[in-house]
Length: 326
Figure 1 (cartoon, rainbow, N blue to C red):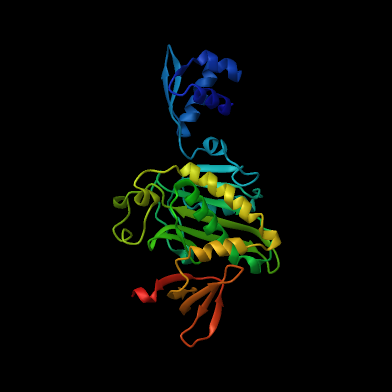
Figure 2 (figure 1 turned 180 degrees about the horizontal axis):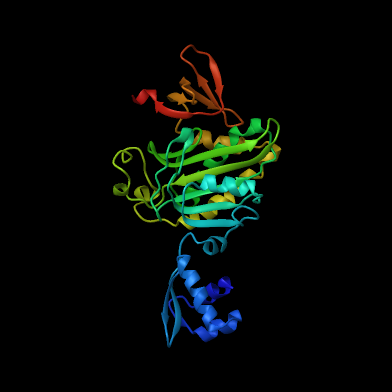
């Protein structure tokens, strides 16, 4: 019902459509139309009303599910959208839905998070209406030992989407960040529920700084972060970036059952902010590793050359500092 009304109003964007016309098209009373219009307003649509003229759509919300679905070029991912203006954590929300049986590709999207999280329990700062905060429900048919590649796959998919929409080339900081000129643009958090030999569900959460101005970040973050707006000098379409990410992610994700991460890893190597640098990696539980980031393996894991000269393979962790920058 609401879909029909918004379709007609969008066809007459900036012009009034009478309540009688909308009632005929929708098959409900004019009082019913008034209720539907108020529902659309609650969803972020700006609609003027006049007793004599009817209703006029003046502005559409950028991240409304209807707007995202329009022009979305995927078969599964993002076809079921759950949207809230604000939530505690999109990952937490997606986990609840996954337990309830949400389909693969279900998207939890919010304008802001009050308890957004990164790796190792760190918080993620989000400015309402300026960035992208979302989580996907996945049910990959892969062995849990292959999960190392999922974060790289997500990072590369977003890097490709950003380039396609904005022509900004960002770098992949292993294993879960996107950076530009050393400053953080995006963070990824993967959380899995499963057993030794099977995955029940995987939640991939992503936060991306899109249209924030430098002054909108807390002082302690200003030297460390960036947004696409700060790089480009103009506001960018969050909806287009999200739609393009979902399209590319679906293509890349569907290669997983064949074990084909080669193109993903090749892209991550070519646009790496990590390889060739001396790094320190926090693996949690007071365990850190140090050495030179030498290479990425075909599964997305990192080869680290320790000061002793021995090579070790690292599947997970957080690069807390490039030691050469100390």
